Length: 287
Image (cartoon, rainbow, N blue to C red):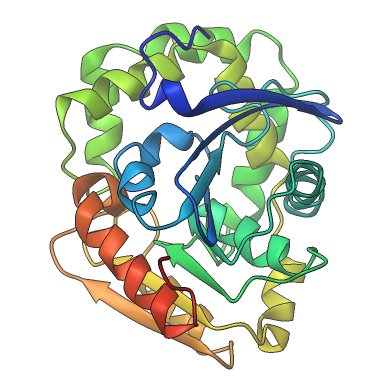
């Protein structure tokens, strides 16, 4: 996928850290906040949050393997543990030591797992509409199995991109998140969905995604955790964050009325300010 015209492109760089070729954006100075997007998205979802936070902090975001502009080096490392390990290696190689890690949706699971892998743990983790629960009932085994089957067919990603990247299809997909986003968001997600490599990376992630180990470890996570929830979220029920927080000793939940799954794209200024307030609460301050 071409990155010409990509949001905040002046802050972009590409880094080879085995086994992937990563796309990162970095802006600002001071203590470090790392932003991690969710499955099927990209760092472009933080396009307004990143420069806002960069006014006070060194702010770093990256496309996850196989997503957007990060080239997936192998399809066998798209599960939570492997992806988090590869991300930890990238941050170490780039001398990025997060003071705070922020993750959206599945990115919140990566944030929590990553926090436990770093030599110097962060002071806190923020999840935005955190996907911290397994699918219930039949969907618990059927959905990952379907994703795995589809990901094995090299034609699937091309077919999905061709059939689902129309403006009407993308608008319907975004409405299904419970969020109301602007025309720029629609155009950016159209570019993502039109890219078979991005779709293939997303399918591979879905096929390998397992949260059982992380869920079992929640009571041992001693870091302060803030879970920000858009109460209109139709992708991840708000109750998921409430349930996850009840198992973590230092977790709190902030419910926001009127926002959906893409809360950080609907109200980036508000989300950035909530992140700032939590950062200050855990001892992370602007210079």
